[in-house]
Length: 274
Image (cartoon, rainbow, N blue to C red; front, top):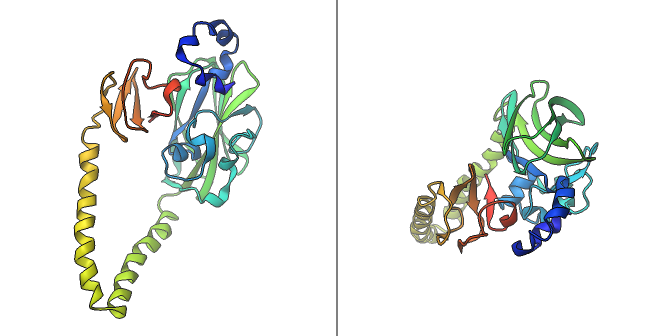
């Protein structure tokens, strides 16, 4: 039922009555920070993610699953641990922030580590806000863990699933990951002079200006992304940030905005909720 978002906007009036009946299917959401696996895919931080990169909010499946994709066959990549998902360093507790692209009555929010529920938040079938945050105690764990966050919908059999890879206890496992990266450049220069002292100086000057030029470009691209309100008729670049109806979005594709292309569930190919 997720594919209804592909209908032309002009047909929305004709299908309004069916949408009311099928409203549970319009409830979507995912953990945006620390970045969940689908958030990393949508941001392009992890490659070869399949369809989930275009609809990170759509990991919907029947309640009760302990899989990152909830058992939804459309998103098998989320269960693929060979992708070496980046882990965010957190302390003995972490705050998980959900972005809800469509809100729906909520039964509970449950967080699992190693298959065991470590926190449950009961909403008693209330309609949540557009963003929801929970602080979860992770003090019983340490090192790299995958937290499964589940949003149980109140009046359907379905739930939404987000797996978040974290490094509990600070930078313990992040430091080894960073160390090899730092070591590699150190080894490279040492090898370069040994192999060809003459070539090394030639390469260094050539590389230095290029690196400097590249390093200067991001600030220029980032500067216009001031978080101003979305407006039609504006030429947005990839990475620009706007606000719309109180939610922040980042441009995924360069385009000139028009009415009906406002950030939201209908335009996920253009805008990523932050």
